Length: 377
Image 1 (cartoon, one colour):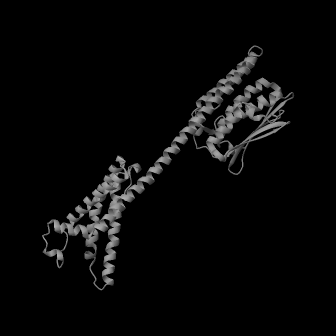
Image 2: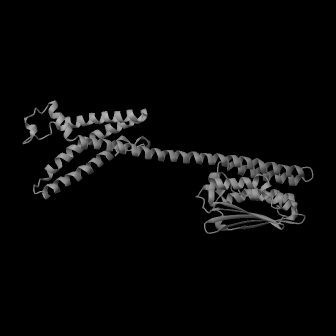
Image 3: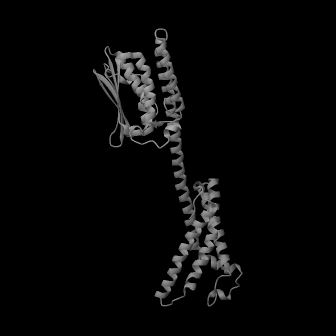
């Protein structure tokens, strides 16, 4: 009959709901009066059957907003139970006296014991009061009960909504922290590679610096995004691979097996780069002969699977100690997808692989532009 303040309903909408509810009960009671009189062999017209329900519930329609306003005031005061009951009891009696007073000029006293009483007297008022005290008192407490029931419901709903919003804000903050760890991590590693070439191969070092600048630009322009289309993520990976190609010269082979149908799938930003970096640092760089890096993507029944593998000597079971890359990746998957994502690691003396698994969701049209990526990078 009323929606408490937490629902943010307008006063007009509240009053419309209240009026509609009382009109419904007035219609039911009118039908009851008409049918009951017919069954008892004393049929009445619809006008007579509707007289009491219409007047009675019209009074309650006017009083209900006042009662609800009183409930809100009492709720804000946070009274002790004894004072809460006393306050509502006193206000209920006041409302019942008002209802009895309204009925004084509307009561038909023809042929009743009230015909000989002065209409506007305390005796007449008290009789009307006690005639309907049980029913009206019950109605008052029903209204109060509905108010507090809805107040509790909407309060719980708003509390859950606030908790969800805070949880989302916390998750975003955690993702931002993880990304802030990741970006300087690969920056410092790349700068170390540049410094190793700057005095021995100036041209190659210059190419690496150019690719590093483009890589940083993509990273910074997409800093606010937690998810990007896979095609954008592959641009970052390609720039990083260009740097590594300069370092490893002719000893590096990169195999790309990217399903074209997955290029627009949403992936966590900078999710592949740490896996590729781990493949170089803990796999290919420790191999004496030529190194092979393989990057794959496929759609497995609604699950996007991204796999990075190398032909290095493996991690010897110590892959969790490979730095922040894998731990960072696992933490981001947990925050973004919970139990719907997984990081599957396979380690052997002939190579190491890391496979990402998370829900396949196609990026909305224009996501790439929103990230600020520049075509042709």
